[in-house]
Image 1 (spheres, rainbow, N blue to C red):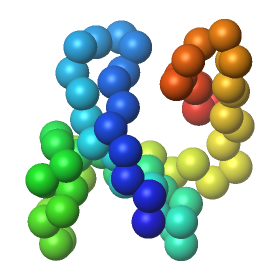
Image 2 (image 1 turned 90 degrees about the vertical axis):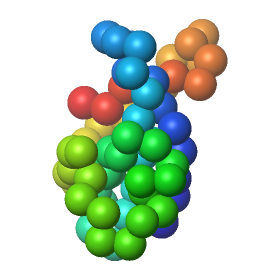
Image 3 (image 1 turned 180 degrees about the horizontal axis):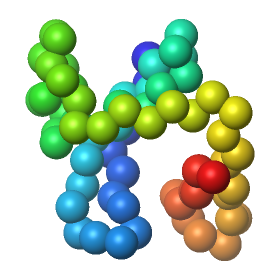
Length: 66
């Protein structure tokens, strides 16, 4: 399981994302503490199976999931 904080480009709200490798799902939480609570319901679950990632080297630490 991989965890990280991301900021959406269309807003100022930050979420904490957890990537679950076994299911290929990205789960969004309000913050790192919420993500650490067992059985805590995520705000959103994004299935990235078959998704395409676009990384622009000119944009530091940014990527798009399509």
